[in-house]
Length: 294
Ligand SMILES: [Zn+2]
Ligand SMILES: [Zn+2]
Image 1: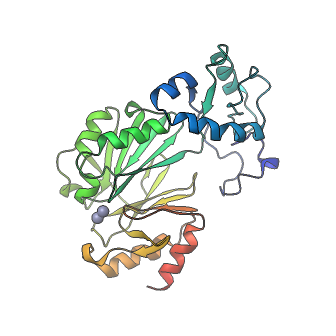
Image 2 (image 1 turned 120 degrees about the vertical axis):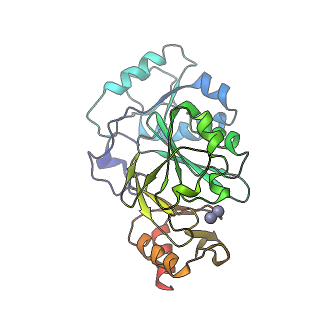
Image 3 (image 1 turned 60 degrees about the vertical axis):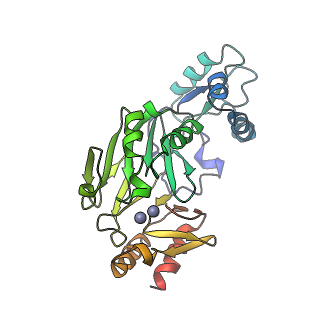
């Protein structure tokens, strides 16, 4: 985001008071490395360029670094731009800042999805798909400009095999990561050292919401900074909207309904599901509508 919250006008999607942004310097990516790591970086640069230009480049930046933007969201600290300047002394090594609030990416694994949140120099993975999904999830981390070594958190929404199937391989690749799951589901997850968490636990800024019904220990994750809810299988994406837990695989539908009522109390623009297309924009209203029908 741009440095001046008073005039930028595009922070409206974040209900954040000024000054609450994390004091994490955004990761500076070397363009050459970024392109080398992943070809679609060209597209990302093309998209980022005009946005950065609209925000106004820092006066410290050297000419030609149109892909850089002032990285300090508080507007009071110029320290982070000096690092960017030093890395742009070679013209082609321009940098791409990652949003300090965080950026989500979906790993669409076919019949199920996993999600990656990059924030600062760290990443969190939510769910790991079926067995054999670790490479695709790793590519999603690279898409965000990070690597498996930057992944510090792997959070499992519940114990079903299409969500924990690659936990072993993901943890093998993400050597710096700790794994988490709801305390009532942990004992059903084999082959990994998983830390139990309960309602209200904070992991990397993600608030755990205990949302039982689909499984007893199912958790959803609410990220205030990016206004995102990751709902796992507590809800599904259907026809562009939100539907309740799948009764075929949900042993306690009344409890699942209670969980949806609970999630309807939160504020979020986007909701991500284990199954189905995300709802982007006004997602909390869609969940409230669903809750009102239960
Ligand atoms: Zn499930
Ligand atoms: Zn599932």
